Structures are given as C-alpha cells and as structure tokens.
Length: 208
Image 1 (cartoon, rainbow, N blue to C red):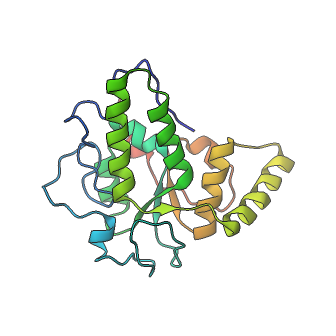
Image 2 (tube, rainbow, N blue to C red):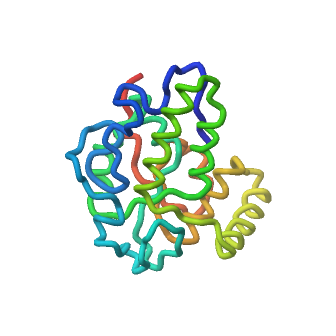
Image 3 (cartoon, rainbow, N blue to C red):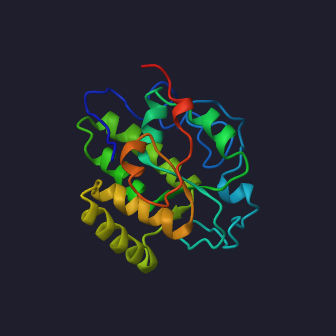
C-alpha cells in the first residue's frame, strides 16, 4: 500500500490547475502527467456506453466477464503525480486498447489520502483529483467471489510465511477473480501471489 505524505505540499494535484488531474481520462493514451484535448472520452464514453467486458457501465460497480483489463493501484497514481512514473507513456505502451479499472480498495486508499490532509487547501485539491478519477474509471467491487479467492490466497501465503499487506492481498484477490493484470510499483510484494499477472511498470519509472 502506498499513501500520501503530508510533508508534500500537494502530492496529488500538484503542478497543474487546481482541481485538475493533469490529463487523466480513465482510459488509455495520455495519463496524469500529460495534457489531453477538451472532450477526451472517459472509459464509458470510449466504450460507447458499453464496457468491453459486456456489462453496461453507468457509474456503478459491476462484474466483468472477459479476462481483458488492467487494474491500476494507488502506487502508480501517486507515482505519476509526484513525477516519478510516466503513466501516460505506460498506458500507451501497455494498454492502448485495454479497459482500465480501479478496485474499490484503491478508491478507499485515495479517499484516505484526502481525509488525512492537514491543510484545507491540500484536502480540497486532493478531493477534486480523486473525484475526477473515480468519475472516469470503472470500479471493481469486492464481492463474494473475490472473498473466496482472498480466503484461498490468504491461506496459501500464510502457510508459506509470505503474507503481504492486507490491502494488497485484497487487491490481488480482485485481480485474480477477474483475470486482470495489475499495474503497481510494489512488484516485490505482489510477485509472491501465484497466478497474478503484473504489467511491466519499471521501464516507465522516472529518475528521482
């Protein structure tokens, strides 16, 4: 799990217009670090109102059926805003036509970053940033099928003495349940999860 640090004046939302994600469009192409033209379609608009998985997307959580999708965790979003990860280039290279998702767990982590901000101005900028991402990106829920996968994964890792963070284990379970790849900068932990497909993020990490 990666979280905001309050020592940063504006870890999310910095360097751009107040309340702007700097080009995030919840799909492919230019990401948080690049500008996009006005009217660039969101994920649901890009799919013509129908997700590639065959479920109608109207802002609610849903259960995809086709194992084609890329899940972003909070580390790549935070890394992009801190100019440590080239999210736009990554999406263009790794998922030019692939649906992009968040999990409800990552949404919680992003909301937590909003709530822990000490200054009102920082909290306001973070909230605008997070809400824009949430509006433009389908959210994968943690349902009963995910719970079954999670229980099995939890037991396997516990028996091997290789447990990972609680949120990371939940996110991994969602990805395994849907058969989706995960984009994360925390590859060391997630590589412990057998069967979890990781997108190649390291080539897009920027120098500190």
